[in-house]
Amino acid sequence: YEFFNSVPRSMFTTFRCSFGDCSTSGGMPIFEHVHNEYGAVASIFYCFFIFAITIGLFNVISAIFVESTMAAAMSLEVAKKKGRLADKRLWNTRISTLIKRLMDVSPEHSIPGRMSDNVDEIFSVDVPGKVIDLVVKDPVAIQALNDLDIDPEDHKYLSDILDPDNGGSVAISEFVDGLRRLRGDPRRSDIVTVDLMIRSMQQQIGDIQRKVTALLEDLPFPSEQDEANC
Image (cartoon, rainbow, N blue to C red; front, side):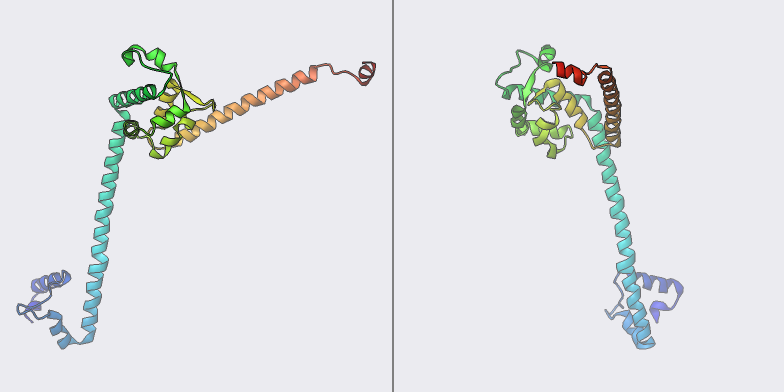
């Protein structure tokens, strides 16, 4: 046949059939001629060939392309997040917005003049937990927290997360320091830091326990006769 009369022509015909254009100039499928000439075995082989190319090879190529695209998008997102975490201007502006919202909502506190002129007074302020609960529902505060990469799932629990002694109020300094630690994704170093702190506390508690035990052993306890005389 004219479509397979030479090696280059056969390769071109195979290429056409691989992409679905497997017909003569008159519109007759080429493999109808192959079936009539070589029988069902050739047709079955052609079916397996098309299946392997269409379902197998093309899907593998598509998967590689999608994986590369997703990896590139993820790398770009990580780079953007690192840039946001390192942006001091972003941190300063958003934390100022949050502090201002806390002061505006809190009925007991206000900012007399510019914030930069009253930094020491502001950082010594204790804000009730209920004020923080109100602020985190404010659209401006929510946007500021999102810009700082604070997990949206943590917004409604900030009054508890940032209150280490469960006293019901959070100092502005604790609020700022807590948000700084909450930024970004959880890291292995966070867990290791907590583990090391707990170990240090265990050692200190063990030392206190030994000292208390030694003091109790040195105390003179009254004998039974002394108790009877009393």
